[in-house]
Image 1 (tube, rainbow over the protein chains, first blue to last red):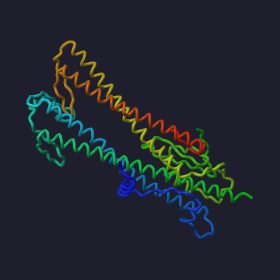
Image 2: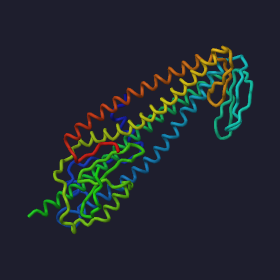
Image 3: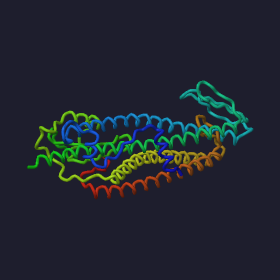
Image 4: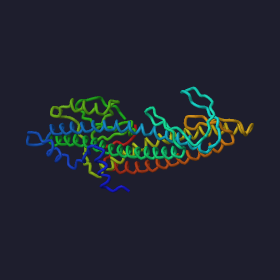
Length: 190
Length: 187
């Protein structure tokens, strides 16, 4: 279990600015957005709203980045699992020759006989392919998969945190706005 | 929902969370008007720039304004988060259900083939290649695959149930406090 402090450090490392809950709108405005006049009024509320909207836009940028990261990881995990499945299959048939239809391009398949030895090639990316012992390949892919899953978990946590901040900001905007409406309502009363 | 005419004196605030993440729902703390499909940021900006507070004297005011407490904020946040999770889980369930169905279809075909010839060759896709298998082997492969998927599907469905339960609980609490000043439905 993660302790509260570890969680706090983690959140700080993400670099997402927190959106603090406003306890008392009037006090918040007079502390941070007080203009020249003796009282806080519409100008302060407008300034505060602009500021909050800016923050919201910032969160939206974060959100787009995180959504992209999440999509990439979600695509990666099934790919790794499939490769693992194929390796397991080769291992099960170790020593035999198996008939396969081998993908040449998107819609072209050729027949191939595959000798299931104890070596496989893994595509590492950047135009590099390496030969591995089949067991080694299995461990490597297993490790990659665990890593991908844990980064996905982390990204999901980030998104959840970000979402809390966005909701808080949105509610704050509504409250600042309402505060001003109510203030004017009181003012207009004879 | 009724569409009200756009009136510059009628102050409106509709705050939406993004559709892609949350499904759609919104919080409204004033009188509210559904504002077509304009993106929320645009609405906000337009609203900020177009309203002159001092000149509009007869604007309708929210009838009663209930103060949002920290615990309410936490409930709203949780609701919003759960809503996001719900969409995700629903997507998972949908894709899994489709695969389960596909596999059931495949199983049927293989069983039919088996009637004529137990050793009939079939291609089975693992990763990106098709592997030639006899029908007999195939049966086992299909069954194990099917069981995996069904277990996953069940897991997601349980998740969905607990999310929906939590959301309903929160909804009740929030509506009890804020009444029609808050809107928590999907559109």
